[in-house]
Image 1 (tube, rainbow, N blue to C red):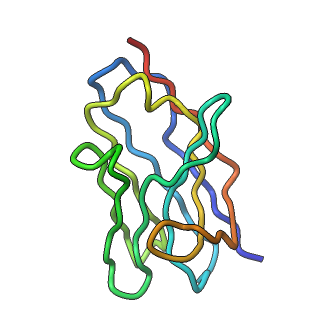
Image 2: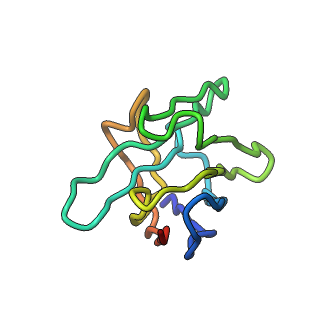
Length: 118
């Protein structure tokens, strides 16, 4: 059974930065990425990276502020979040699924809270 373990969430002021990490316990056979869920809203796509060639896919809402990357040797994916806004506040879930937007998800992480204060 594949496990996805996230870390790096927390509380930050608007304009600040955070980096989330997601370590996969094995090869998932899927792309890895992040979806987030704010209170009262549906879970939405944030970013994904191909396990084959490292191609990246970023949501329009975070384009230019968030970057997704990977360390193949560590089987870990990172989400660098800069210029954070209060509307980025959500639980961020690491996910293994299909491209381009993780519409199908085979595995989920437990989620990590990101809170951006104004």
